[in-house]
Length: 104
Image 1 (cartoon, rainbow, N blue to C red):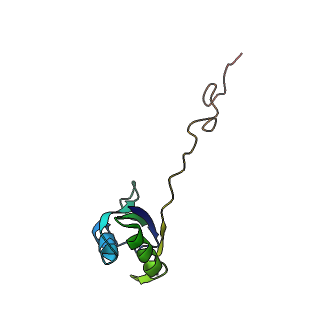
Image 2 (cartoon, rainbow, N blue to C red):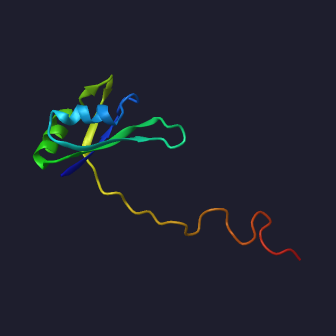
């Protein structure tokens, strides 16, 4: 199985449409358009999982920079998500909130 990253999607593309775009290249195991959690609108990119590596390679070769819905698709093999450090430092400074600690 190969996971592909697809960007420059028209904002009208949903999960089913994304799967249809890739169906001609092999067995699509999943297709997910990433949505903005605040607005519920597409962010213009998504991920597709294709069963066979050779099918995924063909999809990349034929769909990368091809036109769909007035936009040129970007199709690449997805990279693993990088871990980002959480909650170290940053934020509002600590030590007493807005006033900044002890008052004498």
